[in-house]
Length: 434
Image 1 (tube, rainbow, N blue to C red):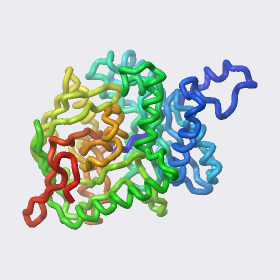
Image 2: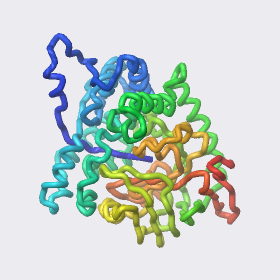
Image 3: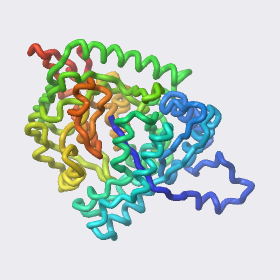
Image 4: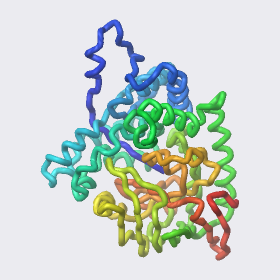
């Protein structure tokens, strides 16, 4: 369960200010957004407001974005106000500024985060705000010329306070994909730019179920299906889950009260929301001290502006004692997982079955929001106290980071081991067995 947040502010309207006033409207879209995508944009915004963040009347709504995604942010703002939002706030983070910092700033300052960024996160929680994060890289290969030892030092746009807000369940939050030309070129590199962007929009339409007559209803039905799987797994009373496949032999222990859930959260005020759109996983938070063995990632990971392939991790008594990746990028991963004591322990394990729509697209999206919903995965860093009993809340892994990486696929079996020692197939050849 990807959980990302914390943003600096940048005003990204220079290109619009150069246009004649008569041609500027609040609905103005970047050149890459053709008129025939208008209905898709509106449908995605509607799903985001009504189902993802479940915006309530009188609520503050925070939209977290990057330059080039204004078209979707504006449509979400309009629909949020139409639903009764009191105020919509746009926070925009520019990865080019992060790149400049990595190249030129004092290395000893790269882990510095201005206090006001954390205060903004806390303020959103205090206001019981709804928050929307627009996902998908605008410049996917931007950080490739950065020293790997430095790339993992700057955690922005993540700040530690976001993990606190998630754990305390004070905001309704959701993350949704926002197609951009840069992202499309990475996902579909063999196509011309316009064709690549068209196909990425087709991907988003399909995986977000925007092709349904009523996408909100379609997701309600999908959540009902996932809920049945959750109920079956919880009835097994599992003590461990074992993953076995090429390069993988990993056993993860459960806490006594660990229970499985789907990607539907409820705030302390009772507002339900879908943390990810799309979401196809069932997940839990394990015992961070009971992880043993080796695991090999089955998909690339895009994080910190870099693509990581060949990830291999060895765990001993819950701690990642060896982290490697191709092209020397294990060093960056080790830096990303050195933020605190919990950063090299697992806070989440998730199972994804072969009927998940994301996997049907036969594409690597280089964004965890989508890729983690095509494959079973685990995550370094903070866990979810909401999926354990009160007696085990203090044992859930705690960290200021959360890094998912994908470990599932048709060649990786997932087996549950009950507290009575019985082995139960969960996934075989990528398909549910429960």
